[in-house]
Amino acid sequence: MRLGFDVGGTKTDAVAVAPSGEIVARRRRPTGWGPDEVVDTVCALAADLAAATGTDLADVSSVGVGMPGQVAPGTARVAHAVNLGVDELDVGSVIGARLGVPVAAENDVKAAALGAYSLQGGTGTIAYLNLGTGIAAGYVSDGVLWRGTGGSAGEVGHLSVDPNGPVCRCGQRGCVEAFAGGGAIARRWGRAGALPVLDVFDAADAGDPRALGLRAGLAYGVAAAIRILVLTGDVHAVVLGGGITALGDRMLTLVVDQLEGSAAASPFLRSLHLTDRIRLLPPGSPAAALGAALIGAAAHEQESLAHG
Image 1 (cartoon, rainbow, N blue to C red):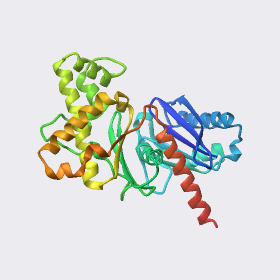
Image 2: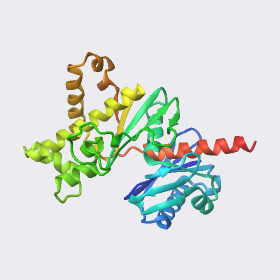
Image 3: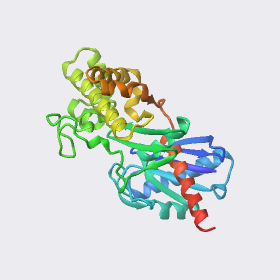
Image 4: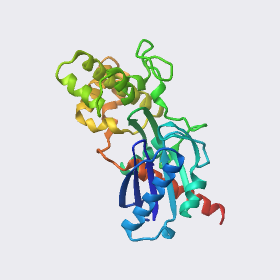
């Protein structure tokens, strides 16, 4: 049995994966604040999964944890997970000692990329584009996650696509994230609400001029990210996931219109068939937790080979 955890700012999603690759149990808990509470949340969920599958933690072969923040390549040390109150946490050592199981860690978006790859059939090359509070992506080719030299491959959120666009929290103007990130849209909307992006779409449907501009900006930013990912990686598919994708066709139709509009003026862009490459994960997909489980399993297999 392999366990995978997607540790988010509000909740942690956990899955148990059988040797066949099938998800046999899934559980969620609110995520605690700070390193100790994060560790407690993961360990409590591990116990939940063991109980749900009728197994003992001693029967678990590996654990993978996906978390926001930076994960140094070749380590299970997470840094700068500010949304969790974690400055630095050696996930492998701390959680591994609690559970008595080998533990690997990865950035949550990169873990989701690997999970999305598996859920999409596990062939070819994909880019996973996470549309949430922020914007980031991950590449997977023939089952291998591409991290880049320092682990920053796929950080498309902070590519500027309009030098006169809105100011981004990174200090630039017109970043993809400044247009399409849920956090940036909420700040620019400036009205209290549990689901600001949904509120913007509803207000736009009612004709609110400011909401119409924000909604158009979101579509512009997502379309720009898709073009960037295809032009730099020539991927078979760009898989969209994250909280904003719960809008479904309300969002996707506008993004497709943006892509078709730019392609109308460019034979080169038309030849790329960008809209045919878009895939949308279903709401509530376990991609990140599944990807974390796969990362944990791969790390365990490599360690086993290294030790004969």
